[in-house]
Image (cartoon, rainbow, N blue to C red; front, side, top):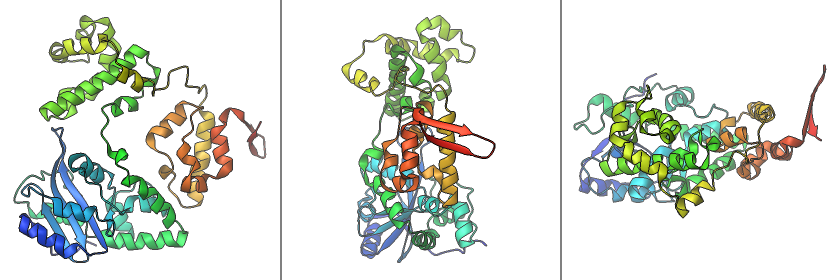
Length: 392
């Protein structure tokens, strides 16, 4: 059924914001979400903060308000539990733009993964399954700068926070029955670490699947190209894609050493890109390496470091983990970080040490952890009646 229309308070001046903060300074919980615009700009524009609390529902106009300190103080108050869904992007935005990091957070998407739902599960699906309410999700790319906001925008914005407390209560009940509240609390601690949200100009290069197989000079060029794109985007307050579309980066990387003519002759690379930026590309490729750049390169595995002639063993182990997680009603996707999982698939010598601590250690157990650490020593035999995995 449709979520019923709720009353709310629109806040667009400092007096109202101060009154909101005073009214909510002693509440036990607070749901929040944000609406922002990141397209065609480097600096994300925060447009709206939606709040639910025992005192009511609030829409805070971040376009009009110049000082958001009162609401930020509430978000940073460790005595108030903050409820979000897929809140990592909200936390990142608040930290990178305002150096604000919400304290004492409960994320319903992560909690749902611990309660047996697939991770990541959309807000609309989780709300529907846990509360029987159907929410509309048609305004994800709306122009949140527009004032006044129309009725559909307001309804959408409110629907992002009105179900949060009910979801929280339902999921807490499930996790308590499964004795997994400790797991969730442990997982949420990492979102209190500012390092998780610090901006790195090299993150994109590290995530590029090509980088491990490149020679040193090409690795260096790729690092520099991504950093150059970020620096220019920041200077112009344009999106990175406006400066240089990502789809062109591999073409430039593979042909820059052959010179300008090779780039100009590439049929999938627009001539205006080369004409406009050739001198920058040339300098990025030929400049001498700095000590800082060498330190960054040292963090990237070389081809000789990577040992993985056959990925069937790690894939078998990952399938065993998935089977085990399904049996205990836990989303296996919570176990592995994307970057480390990718590295484990590529390199049989690599092991994510985070898997051998905390709740992840409890889930995997010593046997699976030992198998992941010593893949080369596994003896796997399949007979007519059984499959046997053991250490050699």
